[in-house]
Image 1 (cartoon, helix red, strand yellow):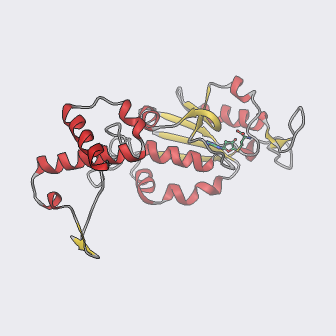
Image 2 (tube, protein in one colour; image 1 turned 120 degrees about the vertical axis):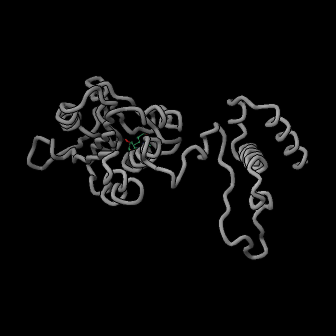
Image 3 (cartoon, protein in one colour; image 1 turned 90 degrees about the vertical axis):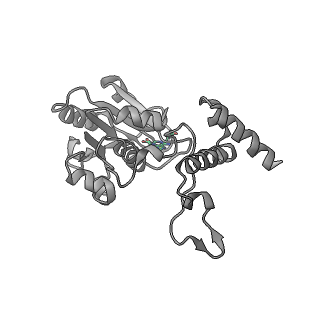
Amino acid sequence: MRIEVLTIFPEMFDSPIKSSLLGKARDAGILEINVTDIRDFATDKHRTVDDTPFGGGAGMVMKAEPIDRALEKIAEGLENPRILLTSASGRKFDQKMANELSREESIIIICGRYKGVDERVLELHPIEEVSIGDYVLSGGEVAALTMIEAVARLIPGYMGKIEAGENDAFAWGILGFPNYTHPQEYKGLKVPDVLVSGHHAKIDSFRRRSALKKTLQNRPELLEKIELSDTDKKFLEEIKNENK
Ligand code: SAH
């Protein structure tokens, strides 16, 4: 997969894309990430990328021209890239969208800054606005990195056996189950017996029940969106009774 990022702060990507699994995936050739400075596509000697808003008001707006020129240049070498623009007013990014994007050959992510970008950029290119959540960041760089991390771990071959994505939160449509590692007892707190029993069916059942419990506590609305088995329903009944 190839990911092209357009930003006025390319240095914000330096260490994140070199570290950890993202760095390894790049070294292994599974993922190519290129970062382009939008200022390189400005047309004046001051490399201006922003200007005052028509209609007045505080703040600056990212000019259409440098972004348009950068997009034209980058899209040249790509076949049907998905073009995303980070925006607090975009479609909400979630695991489903991460899955969908992980199947793309190429993705371009434009990072907004200031009050956002001149709206005409959206008319010139098939751009999808994407938000990572209902809060406002100062720029799209962290949002882009968030999406890159979520998408990259779904690319086949990215994680190998070290970390299996099938156990992730949301893989089942609900939250993840709790994990424990050595020592078996810490400050008087023991790892649940079932996890050291070696009984795989019981372990699976414990994990499913724990995941359901966490979902009921933290994100109950998710339970309405998935198909619950009879065992799930029984677990949830028990959990609700424990809480009474
Ligand atoms: N005035 C704008 C906020 C601009 S914040 C508004 O009310 O929507 C500056 C930039 O940060 C935005 O252009 C966008 O690219 C990025 N950004 C802010 N919040 C974001 C979010 N929740 N998800 C993705 N990008 C976001």
